[in-house]
Length: 258
Image 1 (cartoon, rainbow, N blue to C red):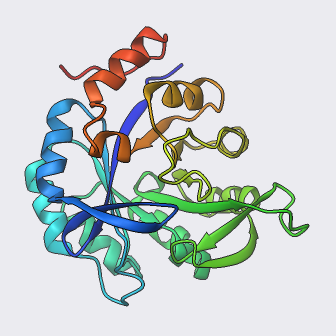
Image 2: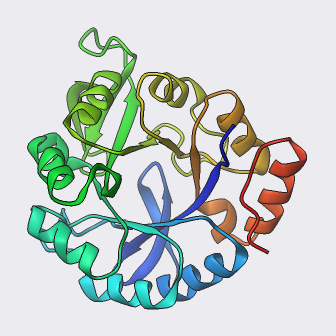
């Protein structure tokens, strides 16, 4: 088993980190640069930043924030939200990000995945997806893709979309379970495992992390390559060193940075 990655997620609104449950009732948690520096020092493997209101407000991503992050940390980080064109992707990468995450944009314009992969390489293009469980016969996997922060269902099957995105050039997929998001009750193992076993690129589990055992489960049972954590570390209840030490005890290969 290759080393598994721990990736703190910082949802950004008005230059502040915010967190909610199933995309609702968000609360302010602090300054994103300060939090990024702390998590970097604690030994996280990567970071991801989502400008969660950029697309809804029809504005570009806060490029100054991306530059500030790049100056403050020395690990790879991905950025999503407010990215509409290959030119936007270029600006983000030139500002210091290593990866660009596309979600609603890719659903509306799947060609942006291919354009980005041709311009910058598949390793730079991350497909973010927000699936929700469904009984719709249009979604044989049992999961439907949603967009605009779960405000809009698409009728697209999650597994079919994951496969298509990889064919288009996506180099990584973040599977954020809407049903589990912010609950801290554990990752959606069925959904994550189904996609991880169906595509040849790394799959990142997101939504539901509440303790180290949840990460161990998604690595061992769902074969995820990485796991996103948010509320469990933002709250201070757990630290990245604690999580990594528990995972090592569980026999999971983890990069130790201290």
